[in-house]
Length: 277
Image (cartoon, rainbow, N blue to C red; front, top):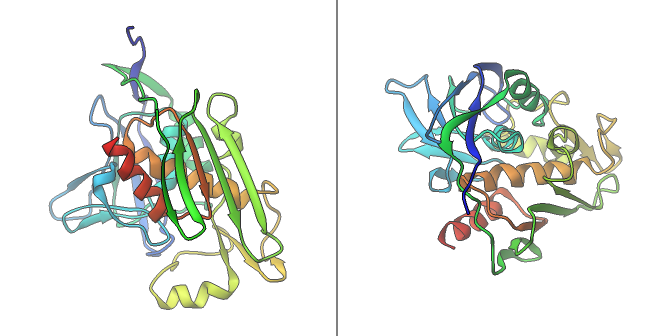
């Protein structure tokens, strides 16, 4: 069987500027067309610019976001942009960034998707790799949290969360990329956090750039900054994060990715197992 599909890249350059969630540092991001090389980052603010491939082996840490690094040079909170690139089918792109963390923007992938859609996606000369088909279940579990890849005739993503706050509770979302729109169903879902954890996280040097403008914040009484874009927006956002983290495989297998109460750490552990499959 021959593969008539071609790899893709952007039709034109994109520039986006904003504040990083954890660092609070403003960065300029330029997305540039690339004929080959996959998706990769380039820190332009370091003395010697370093290319950081968006692959599983580049993961340095996963505390409340996914950070990629080569040597001492890293780029943090990569998951939303990577999910947008995968969701819109961009195989090759050079991502130049002038700081250590991608902008959070409005807390979702919506603005990335809008910028990519406006720029356009075009085919390159190289054939696209046929995605592998999973034949056996692969999973990672930690307590009652887990993430799994299950054999499936089509690619599907399902995510469940469970929090004691009544405004969130137990909620799920399932999305198949051949039947529903990433642009409208997944990309707009924003990151979320909890009011009682804000001071603790800031004391730990995290969420310096977080605000009610770029994250949903929940307390025991309810949401501090409604309205939500979807009744199950938190579950959809966790699914968005999973897509971004699994994109580090490069070519995503045809499988049903199923997660419950998982984390960036568990997502990446599953991706590492799938690399060896």
